[in-house]
Length: 332
Image (cartoon, rainbow, N blue to C red):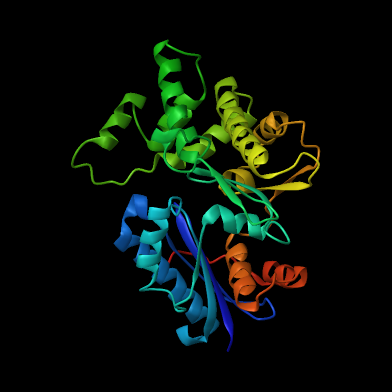
């Protein structure tokens, strides 16, 4: 067999997909998150390997059947990060000459015919990347919250907890988020949340899991939740404007692909409206596209592009989308 491997390594999950030359998905695997900056290099390599092996098993294929591989990894941001990711992937990739990209780049490829435009991803974190027709790439943010990042689930959830506490004790506007967070976590008082961070506390706590509560409260009209969701859209617009000014002429057609769980699953009109309203009106050729396939499809297309020496066709992309089925559970 002549197979193509694509991997989407995100902060909360890792998806691997194996497809044939015609774009038929033959195997998919899932594992835990693979951001080496969060879980470490060993756990990242293990997660990627688990997902890849599961996809190969599903395809009934051997590693030697893979003729090209493309990995889109969260955390592959700086040149040093790419060095680290290449090193850890060298031991798990079935194909030695694999391609490595940031996970936002594969989302952009999945949502366009040629990988040109702007990709805005909001999942556990947020990342923004643009590529113009000359192949020039410009990235904004996506490094760390301490360096100014915002707009992802982790950021929104942490802000929600703070706003809920401030609204409860009188420092801020009261919000339904307080009671909903307390109920979700099974606490008697919101202040007991600090125990989750005590030394020796063994139950893992991912505060980003509270983000859906914020979007639910926003849909219910809670003003505090609505403000938090709108601010995420405004931040995405600021990042997109920076990329527009760096890469594109004002008369160009520029697709902006929206990927990640907040854009693809939460699907908040408040967040989308804030983004649309914040974009620079001097660029009338902007087209917002909510990604309608899983980002891993962009990684498979990236593998095909490199191996074939030209862009995979729209027909192949359509077949990948039609034959892809999300894996039911994690393999790791």
